[in-house]
Amino acid sequence: MSQAFDLSDDARLASALARQAGQLLLTARSLTALTGKPLGGLGDAVGQQFLSHSLSALRPHDAVLSEEATDDETRLDRSRVWIIDPLDGTREFSEGRDDWAIHVALCIDGHPTIGAVALPGLDLVLDTANPPPMPAAPEGLKILVSRSRPPEVASRAAEILGAELVGMGSAGAKVMAVVRGEAHAYVHAGGQYEWDSAAPVAVALAAGLHVSRLDGAPMVYNQKDTYIPDLVVCRPELKDRLMAAVG
Image (tube, rainbow, N blue to C red; front, side):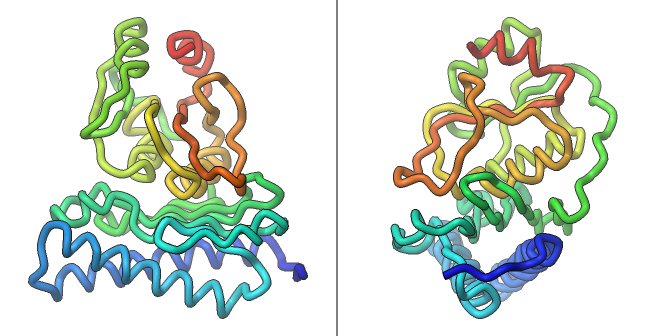
């Protein structure tokens, strides 16, 4: 069974839920004496409880796919699927850093249609409800990569393009840094899942950035296998050179 909603209402809901979840996680971190992995586990649990209960109450006829919940494959028969990451960058959250995020996306027929990414440590939410205008490019070509697992393909592309590799935490934080004009691109290879990228990709597309797999294929969601091992997000003027460099 499906129920019609105004997509502008969905966009506002995604943004509000991402913001509220971020505020809850900041409060939880400030009130606990936990550190390290136990703190990260607390953050995952708080975010999951809030987002899952909210979506169940407010969009009861939609499916939900979450990193922190058992996959219910009845979602494969649904057109509307919320894909959430209650805490993207658990390690960064547990270390008291700012480069972690909350992801809330609505994918319709596999397309990342609606998205919101909260960056609570920066008191920011970027979303498809109000896509940010593309800022001026930063000085010096910068490509964002994982702090702990910078992929070889990114290193090769940086060498070809004369770019600087910059490590950063969560996937959401990295994509939003490109959206905000702090870097030119984000290149990832080596393992992610749908919840790692759905909301950031929705926001990046709405902001006019190029988004694809390493081979240039579009990002498609609500698949039986939720593994999406690679991602390229970049400013449109860099697309041709970057895709040639990672190919």
